[in-house]
Amino acid sequence: MRGLPVGDAALQDHVPAGRAAVDTPRAGPGLRLAFTLGALSSFGPLSTDFYLPGLPALSSDLHAHAWLGQATVTGFLVGLAVGQIAIGPVADSIGRRRPVLAGIAVYIAASLLCAVAPSIEVLLVGRFAQGVAGAAGIVISRAIVRDLYNGAAAARLFSRLMLVIGVAPIAAPALGAELLRLTPWRGLFVVLALVGGLIFLLAALYVPETLKGRMPARGVRGSAAALLAVAVRPSFLSFAVIQGLVLGALFTYIAGSSFVFERAYGVTPETYGILFGANALGLVAFSQVNGSLVLRFGPARLLRVGMLVGLLGSLVLAVGAAGGLGLVVIIPALFTVVASFGLVAPNATALALEDLAEHVGTGSGLLGVLGYVIGAAVAPLAGLGSRPSATPMSAAILGLELAAFLLLIVVSRRRQLDAEPAQALA
Image (tube, rainbow, N blue to C red; front, side, top):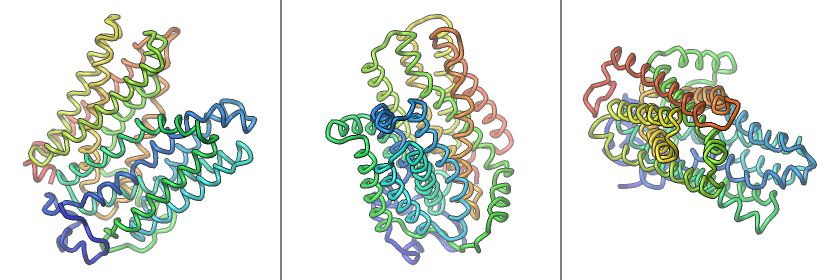
């Protein structure tokens, strides 16, 4: 597999004249580019999870209530949502390289601001700025994949990126906790700045300009019009909502699983950490299986398989919770639900961006925001009930998985998703 040289001219061998992307990977994108795009995609989980072990010390040092310390997580997520909406149209107007490099530079500065923040208010501003800037890496990495490839080839590369993305939430909290033995909480943000610097170097060296036929800057009205044009396009909206519903199920698990395991079943925090990590590894493993199979079977068929696996897992989870069947059923059922996202996410992303040749960046940003909105709306459902129980969480997950599966059936009938693998949805 040879690397992808930097520069527009070098891309002529990868993007045929008159086409936005190729359907089959005649030449791979290169391990360096794939790793760099994965690193750009990891800004979200890395920036969210890495400093969590330092939250208590942070709140105490800045004389802030615990809820204000936790609000620094919310501030980052709000910035991430705002950034994805704003940066997508910009990337469609002026290209991919400049916005992503500018975004990383701002991320580095925001991380250093967090490190020296004299008050919780300044820290909240820094975290919001981190989110807005980090969104550039997330949005543009997806857009670059779609610029280069389409269909099964795009789904394959999205699967490979999840190998890097999936490791971040597993390793970041443990690494942050270890670093707290050597440095105060402020040092964690210095480390994030250094990581941002490394990603900046990788992006500067290995990320080419992949946007062809740049459009003039749109301004606020033009960007809003582009967002609306993408949002009402059925081919995008259907798969974006499917992914958003399944992502909502994943967020429900993330929000409720610690309470379910520790309070309802008496699992220790250490054991819960092991279970959480195992589920995350399952997600990564399924995504890599998807990457190996998608060229043969196509993203549409594997999306259907992933949705069916998730629905069956959620059904077993709901029955196990309602019937009081215990951890012997709950643990493998949750593993199945979480791991199935490794099949759903890369294929749904590729299919959602399939027909957005001129609005890829805008669609990429909107795709990310939609998932966060659905996730934020449904995640509190996991905490319903007067006593600790897996039933509310399992019911919410089953409802979301079922809704996504039914929507997929409707889309399948309308769009004939059983197309040939190399031309899925063409």
